[in-house]
Length: 398
Image (cartoon, rainbow, N blue to C red; front, side):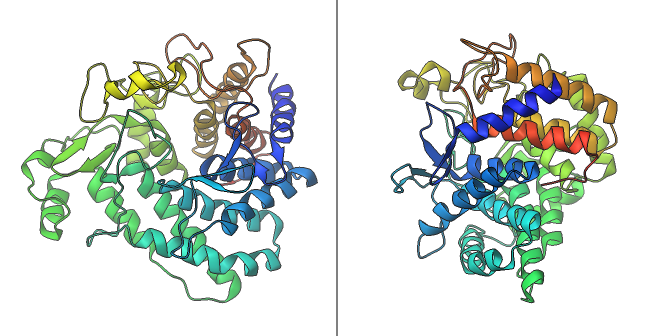
């Protein structure tokens, strides 16, 4: 089944290929999204398929063409080539990672020279969202892939994991061109660990550097047996739930040290985060209205975009994140577990509302019922990333 799923995943990416790049899904999201598209590019480059490589480049190019003078990358572009949405910070972050990934796959120096000025502008725009001495990006509400009634704001763990990776990527690209490195990613990494994995020592440093106004609320987050990073930290508020994707990225990109990695993995296994399929994106689900979840917003949304418990961003299963989860298991040496989870991820992609192999956007976090858009590009790309890494014994491809 795992090879059949790979073949079907490649078909999905080809089905979603347009003259402007990879659209997010075949029939619902009839537009090209920076984060979806960039992740799709990362899967496409592993296939070494010429058609998909061309679409990957087109995807990166359409966002380059629509970049603002200040460096912002659109969140989404319509198939007529016009930007339809801005707002998102991870649009810039994933686009930079996508440019890096494409260059590493093709070693096309002309591509890199052509994209370099726009890549620098993209990272400079992000730099202006660092509003204090922390070196970390601050976000407005829902300015990333969790753009729903679950709103995270302030310093978001996921965003700052991407920030660390994007800085590493642009430094590597600078080295390829003989340019000076722009930032120190190790400083970002240190600050991520100080803020999002609180200790008594980090509380003192955070107060001294002015990351938070007062420390009393933040000291409550200090726990000797902490099992994962904080979700986000805002003005005199922190959200303590586990953002699965961000913790997976922290392990993949060596933001988490061995001790933190061990604790996070034990938490994932204990909480059965990959049951019924890889993987639930938030744990535990939010059951009552809170600072993080505003259910009034769901009144105006389609059911597939509502955040009831185990729906959508509220502990729903997202196969694209499942791909990164399986990839992470392989990278930390859990190859047998990774192989088993890859089979279950293939099963998740096979389940359909009307027919098999629909590569659904998301599934119910308890029942595994497919609930989102079908033929989702990043669901296919996430699987390709995991499949290729396991079957070809690759190093981390992203």
